[in-house]
Length: 83
Image (cartoon, rainbow, N blue to C red; front, side):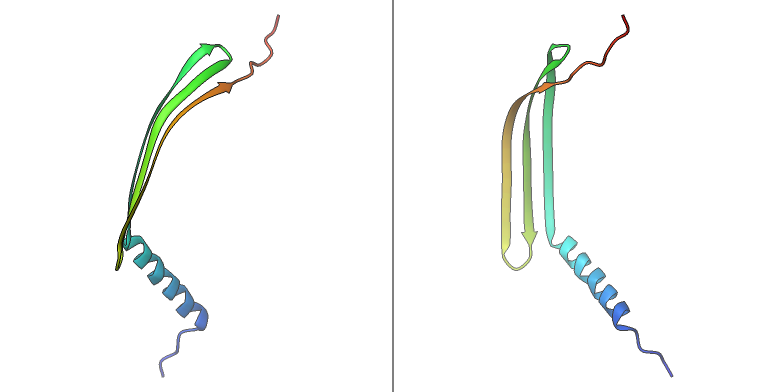
């Protein structure tokens, strides 16, 4: 007599199937470029650009994207040095 699968096993198999379907329906791309310039030994300027786009390939072909430019300043404290 064949055994019936447990509810836990059925739940795990269903979750794996759902994850596979979700991965098949989402396409995305990401591009980042940036740099850093030392103003002095403890102060740095950061700059760059980012782009992210995604497409859902289910019933309605939905697209979205995000673009950004950034400029920032970073302070990095120096460690104590022996005198």
